[in-house]
Length: 341
Image (cartoon, rainbow, N blue to C red):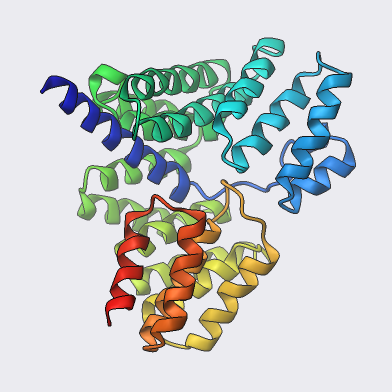
């Protein structure tokens, strides 16, 4: 009985952590840190050709096995094609060669977390071990560089969803949020709002997110994180408010087509414009773990067609989304719903 409870707790931890890291914290520019790559591989990565980039990096590793950045970016490419076992191996090599680089440990933690999620469906002992290592690598990343905001947010998201036996709990999360706030007050406020959302304290979360928007943050990522929250809450008016704030900061940011399309679908208006925005995003932005997922864009396209009562077309979009995210329960339910009508 105890083993079953532990198993369930790991599944909850991983589900909440994955949701937090995939929907919160819209990514920084994809090109960040890519200057350590040869130009041809940089282009492959930025355009979403991760398998080809991985092949080129593997050749580079064979020629120069002591270059840590090659192992690191190989691990990143393998992460994007969801080969988490090999991603972990490459990122381990990177951390061994450059043990003081915070980003390397942060991405190793992410890879361990995703592999733990995979293992949780068949091997709970392995999942538990990987979950603990996820926490450990995030802690190392933050210890090495407290200004690594992504590592700070990854650690806080894990603590917010994990039980004390895995290093989590509200107290630990709040302590880390205070440390983050000393480095970056806006990110600290976002982390606190996200903690409230995880704990289903939506009134407090809403208050924090509204305060963030009122403060007039000068970074688009903060506004898009607020937009993500209101998207998930189904609050079209406040999502639109956040998207407008984001557009004022960086009107040419390529993520905006996704957010504008989703906001219109939520409002159930201008369906043609919404579908065009979402298709533009799918056609021009690579599917990357640090950007809104293509599966999500297909899901909202499906919802747009469902709103129009075009159920066959809605089913096609939901099926496309499921092909990219086959474990997504909400997508399976959406597909069943339109197929039954």
